[in-house]
Length: 325
Ligand SMILES: CC(C)(COP(=O)(O)OP(=O)(O)OC[C@H]1O[C@@H](n2cnc3c(N)ncnc32)[C@H](O)[C@@H]1OP(=O)(O)O)[C@@H](O)C(=O)NCCC(=O)NCCS
Image (cartoon, rainbow, N blue to C red; front, side):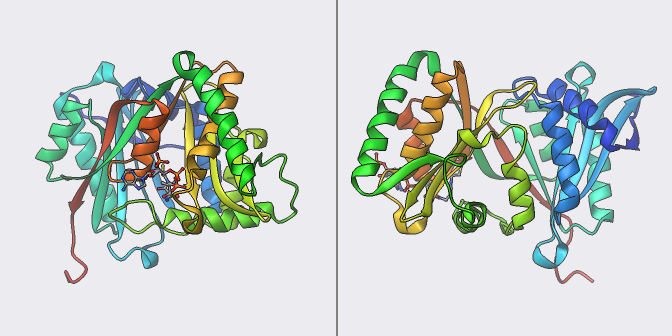
């Protein structure tokens, strides 16, 4: 087996990285425009990245990376490591040496706990992770909804949910139609609060307003396709679909409701608005994902008619303890 040679990826490699990630896992195509946007956004975030292109005789065949938040806010100093090896060049040894290499980079960066997400349908990578000492942690469930099959029902349910919300004084509107000069600040506050309730083994860091605003204005998120539920001018639930500009499935970015308003059907109601809009736009199918222990979200997705697809398995490997010298 010939080892890969690694070079640091520059912003000009974002499109290449998206191609390599797509070649590694074709059922989850990565959008080149969005990959570049995320890389450009990194300067506004507190996360730190290492991104590399793996080459064979000068030919790019892999994208490998590490990413972590500020160490002072992460008691376990966890760092995500990823290996995307083009399937055409997939060999177990190559996969193992790529994973070992990127783990070494992360350890040199000061990580104590390594984190990786791999598809349930990627047996080679799952075996390599186990061989390299990673242990299974949580599962992220993936789902798809066939809108050609379920579209009519979804549009009807969306209409009913809107009427039902209005009857208790809750208005379902798009971000574009919500007229409030402070709307992004209010939405950021609600978004940050609700993220703390996502089932997770690791701390979820609070996102800055600047980073949130940049994500709101991302090319895959038209403001007239992001939905919020408003009670007395205050956002109490949100849901939006992301529409990748070049390739990839239309996908729910996030659905949440404020803790004071849960169990009233509002999360399902806003999600339904975004789905009904996708039906009207002629989108054939949409995807969504949620943690395998997120019972209300699992229930909502099942009830909406989503069918499960292979999810992502989170893996952890401790490389150092807090009190190691
Ligand atoms: C998940 C979340 C959005 C649900 O919000 P919500 O406003 O309570 O949702 P709804 O009221 O629309 O629907 C909840 C449904 O789950 C059901 N449910 C609640 N807890 C449940 C449980 N433990 N097991 C099974 N079903 C459950 C409710 O009965 C309701 O179903 P029903 O209307 O058929 O009776 C909310 O808890 C949240 O914001 N969590 C944090 C953010 C998050 O995890 N988002 C999803 C990430 S992808």
